[in-house]
Length: 367
Image 1 (cartoon, rainbow, N blue to C red):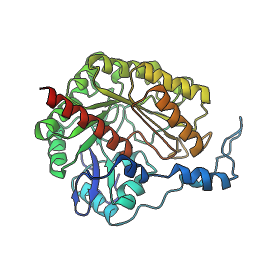
Image 2: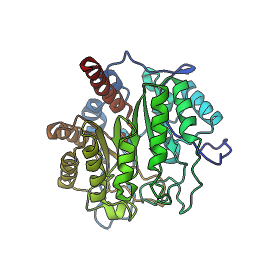
Image 3: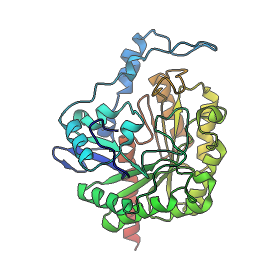
């Protein structure tokens, strides 16, 4: 949370994308290739920094030390006019950002705008307190978070509409204290957004404890992308995620969403560097494809605090690039794979926007 921000009793959530100058607007003239240039250039890493680095990248079994951060994961300290302006606006609106709650390493680039002056920030629905305690996540937990704010869906929609966004991601904490896991709240937020605009909406949702009715509720909200993260490979799931978050259950959530709406784009994410093998990564990718997932992100796990799981391996940019190629071969619509890639990855959102807009245009022509 913001240090200077007095905590509100309840929080609103949305994703702020494409912030330029004093207004939020979509940079429609940029191509997908240009958007990719905003992030780390894998060719530079492989040709330069990566080959020159001779530090240790993987812990041996029983090694209790901590790996040093390799150069391709070092990011600049957040600063700049866009960063300050966005932080100020979010503070005034009393919004809680995932960027800070989850200690995202991209906050400097996203909020600062990068070389193209484009800034992004992610904010959560249903508050900033989760009912689960995954060992990789720094979001705070409680068995009894604050009650939901019934005004949050419409307030969120009003804020998004006022900012003139083109693509928005709604994410949330897990709310096992609610009978439906918060599905109706998420769905109502999507519906309010759709009432007021043509914004494309992606929802990164919990597993709802596998409740198919809750999954159906979100799918039928008229969202454009249904996202749920498996986070890690099957063998490591019991050690990495909360005991209530199960690998096969997450796959079932994604498969069920696709069954309710075969045209819906589904999306998931995997963290690397927790001790998984190459074979396990490939199997997880194949499992996601079998579940009908169309978009995938793969990124480096970063230990948020000393209380959380240690990094077992820093995966090289070269390996990430090979996984991106594998994703294409397996048939994913889009695979974002890189050291600093996270589940909400702005180049990926831009790519999915193009796909979704083409679908809209085709549907309009057929009517």
